[in-house]
Each structure stands twice: as C-alpha cells, then as structure tokens.
Length: 480
Image (cartoon, rainbow, N blue to C red):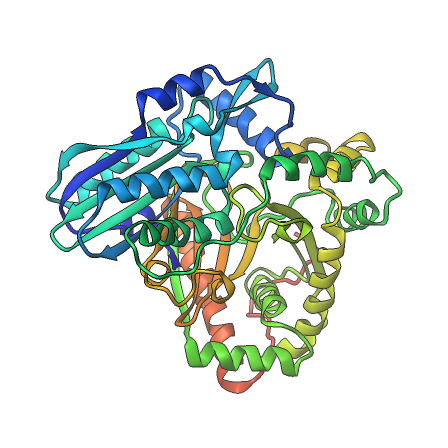
C-alpha cells in the first residue's frame, strides 16, 4: 500500500458499480434507536466541525479512501455478501450521528442493516471523468449524518476489477484504511471459495469511546502527562507547532490543500538509515524526527524542535484489526542547536519520542481541557498544529498479499494552514506525503524543505551520520 494523492488514482476504464443498502436495510436503519455510547473525543470534534461546514454550505472533503486491483471476473453477489460480513464485524460501521446545538447523538443500526446490492452507474473513458465521478460520490455519500457513512464501489472489466472504499473520517483512521481493503478482499476471496486466512476478531470502537471517557477522568492539572504538555508549551511561547518556512498565508488564514509527495530512499538505503539510527541509540521512527529537526534548524534556525505526532491507541484493547479512529496526539520536543551531528540529535529525539508515548496515555482532550482552564493555550486551542507522522506499513496484517501490495490510500482535500507530513515505510519505499496550501509561495518553500530533508536522509544512509551546519544568513533563534 502507498499513500498518495487522490488524483493519482487512475483505474483503467470499465463499468462503474456502486453498492448501496437494500430497501429492507434502509428501513431497518430508519428505525434504529439512539445508542448511549458517546462519540470518541476526536469523533466529537470532527462531527461538530463537519456540521458547521455543512451549515455554511461548504463542500464535504472530510473523508478518506482506499482502492486496489483484483484479478479475476467480479462476482457481484459474492462481493455483496463480503460487504455485509464486513459491516457485521465492525459495529461502528452500523452507526451514524446527529449534531444539534453542539450535542452529538449516536444511532446504532441492528444487524438487519447489513444488506447490500450493486447497481450500475455507467462508464468512463478518461481519468478526469473518473475523478469527477468519485469525488462527487464521496462528497455526497461518505458523510456521518445518515447511514451508511461509507462508500463501496468497483470498476468492472473483463478479467479484473478495481475495488474501492471511502468513509467519513468519523468512521476511520489511517490504520483502518490500511486494514479495510485487505479485509474486504479476503472476505470476498472466502466467498468465492479461495483459501485465505479468515480475518481475526476485532473489538468495537464504541467500547473504545466509552473507555476513553473513563480514562480521561483520571487525569487532572497535576498529572505528570499534563505537566509535560504544559512544560513544552511554556518553552514555546504557548504556541502550537508551525511549519518553519513561509507558506504564503496571513496569520490565521487557510488555503486549499495540494498533496505533495516525495520518494526519499529505496529499500537498501532505508535499511542503511535504519542501521545508522540504531548505531546512534535510536530507532528509525525517532530518526525521522531528528532529521526533520535538523532540517528546521538548518533552514530556519529553529534551535529547539517542537512537533505534534500521531500515535496509535489500538494497543489499549482488542483493536488490532478494528475499524474506527484509534489515535491520540502527543508532543515531541528536544534541543538541536548545540548538536553537531545527526547521531547527537537522534538519541535526543529517541528519548523525546519515548517520553511522548508515555505522555500519550492521557487522551489529548483531557490535556487541552486542563491547558485551557489555566490559560496555557488560550486562542491556540483553535489552531491546528503542524503534524508529523511516521508509519511502517510492513507490519500490517495484509502485507504480502496482492490486495495490499496494489492498494492506494488517499484523503479528501479541504483547506490547511500548515504543511503536515506523513513519512512512511514499506518493503520498497521510504517516502513522504504532505498536505500543503496550494499557492506559489508554499510550493517553493515546501520544495526547498523537502529537498533538504531528503539530502539529510540520503547522507545519513550513505555515510552513517550527518554533520549539522547553519547556512549563511540564517540566524539561530530559540523556539518557533
């Protein structure tokens, strides 16, 4: 699987098929009662934001999707059965939500909603026609306020087909998207009589949301995790992390998203990078933060790195193969300006990243609530931070099977004030994707930044280390 821009998804032409609930399933959904399980904290924020965007009349882009290619003639009935089984396995996918005066209410459909049938939606000849079609479908159907909040379809051809799935972000995260396409493909393969492993049991995101509220109640203003956040923000003037170079936006302004991608290293060079990190007493995950911190320092004079990262929370229960939003956010902060080599920074990044995992025990909303009440953040609560994520896709359950190897993962493209990066590794690639503002200033800054970061990675992979320098004319300053 590779994360890429949606515009790079270019299946061969064929017959467009859509899977929708049967009339009986829609009737069952219409009579579904309110369910007492709360949304998770991230769901709640997301749902309020989506509701506000809908009230403004904004187009819906808060979805994420994945697609793959499958060989063989498509058995439509088998895929219908596979989809039903998939929905029965994941309780969250039988849910939808209401938002009224900021209050979020969950509905949960019974097992009777898990009944689907295909319909034909015409053909296409060009990539542009296909992109127009799927973007319109995702924007209208992959929404959280009516059931289903996900979209399934196929492009049928002689001897093969494209299978795709998209869902509103309330029902999924990056890990879920990496799981879903292999699971659907495996369930389909079982339906047509192929010998593949049956998917493992998966815990419910509803249970996770209930547990998250209980866990959050254990953290208060004097909890070590919240004090760690407070200390980091105090050292950074109470500001959320920003991209260190000019993105061509006024303070508080957001711009339409453009997806930027960069191939960083091949498999051999990535293995060499891994060895260099271990030699420095770090892992490649923390080595990524070290390389980014060095780039911030060399290009913008940022002496003390401060970032926000995404960490999986699937380990908190039986959620290894569950569908839902299983993440938390945590700060990563360490000094750079007095270091001379990557090895010096890598061990600091390792210690900081390990600390961030400990800090992430506190749900971020418990943290933000505490930091808001004592004035640590103030208006920064409304600011989206510049994010850095690292995912190693080699450890996902579907790795090694065709559906995963041929999969493409993409997101909707709304607006941003940052240039957040997702740096990923698989068996063949070490690469990054970034969501950046679509303007010439941002394009030039991000290209300069990514090229420098690639040089840092390349030097570490080739030489086993990297000597840090401050380019002429760049004044070293503390913080951001």
